[in-house]
Length: 150
Image 1 (tube, one colour):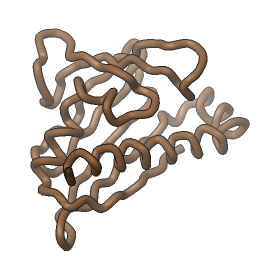
Image 2 (image 1 turned 180 degrees about the vertical axis):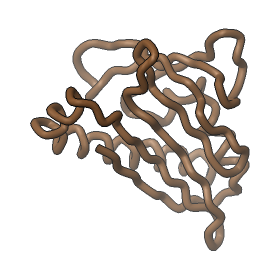
Image 3 (image 1 turned 60 degrees about the horizontal axis):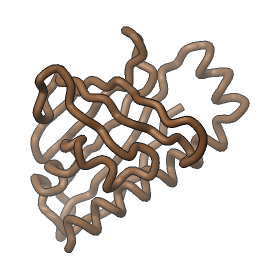
Image 4 (image 1 turned 30 degrees about the vertical axis):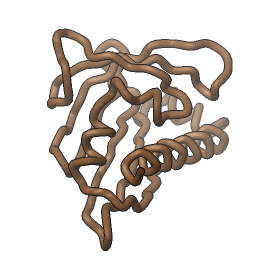
């Protein structure tokens, strides 16, 4: 119930971090989350900052908002957030940036909460959702790459 994708980008760690940590730009990159906005007076990334994302899962069906909380924000290195329902974390997303050769390797990953409902869901439909998440992460990273390499 976790996966990751890594894409090499000819860029600096700070340039990539500024894009992945600016949730207001998520609609430019994500194939499913088409907008996000900071909440509670937050104006940028910082551990504990909250935001909400507007999701169109699988690009069809119902659109819905998710509540998110930043869990890691190290400029040039990492940005991570939890998707929360009430007080429960349901999914964790993370970007890691590492210097490599002529640029950086950027890894996007997710980890679903391990509870009985997600275990059953993953057993029945996880193969399809896992494939969608993997393709979505690759799309997101390649769109970021296009911007930082332009």
